[in-house]
Image (cartoon, rainbow, N blue to C red; front, top):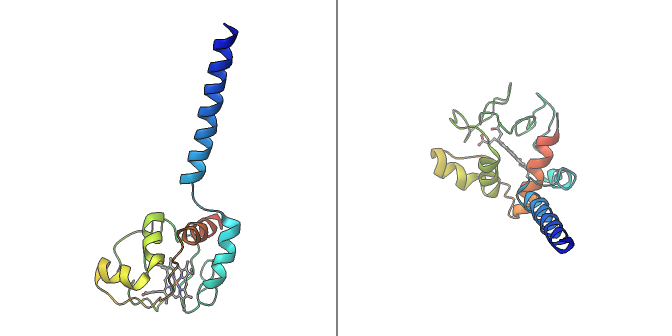
Length: 132
Ligand code: HEC
C-alpha cells in the first residue's frame, strides 16, 4: 500500500516536472534578455507610444494591425498591410523582413535587419510584449 502511494506520488511529481518543462519550452522568451536584443533595434525603434524614429514605435505592436502605428508616415513595405502581428508573424518577419514582405504582399520592405537566432526573436518579442 505504502509502495503504491509512493509510486503514484513520484509519477505525479514527474508529470508536474514535465508540465513545467514543457511550459518553459513553449512559453515566450525572456524579456530581460530581449531588452538587450532590442539594442539592435533602438537606432530605428522605440517602445514608447507615438515615438517614432526611422521605424515606427513598437509600443503594443503584438496584436496590432501591421503598418498602423499612429502618426508614422514612412511605411513602405508595410503600407496597406492587411494582417495583424501575432507572435508567429513577427517571428517570421524578424527572421528576414524583406523576404517576408516579398512573399506576403509583394512589396519592398525598408527594414533590413535580420534576427537569425530563434532565441533572439523570442526574447525580443517577449520584451516588446512586456512593455505596458
Ligand atoms: C535601420 C532601421 C531599423 C532597424 C535597425 C530595425 N527596424 Fe524595424 N522597421 C524599420 C522600418 C523603416 C520599418 C517599416 C518597414 C516598411 O514599411 O517596410 C520597420 C518595421 C518594423 C515592424 C513593423 C511595425 C508596424 O507598425 O507594423 C516591426 C515589428 C519591427 N520593425 C521590429 C524591429 C525589431 C524587433 C528590430 C530589432 C531586432 C528592428 N525592427 C530593427 C526600421 C528598422
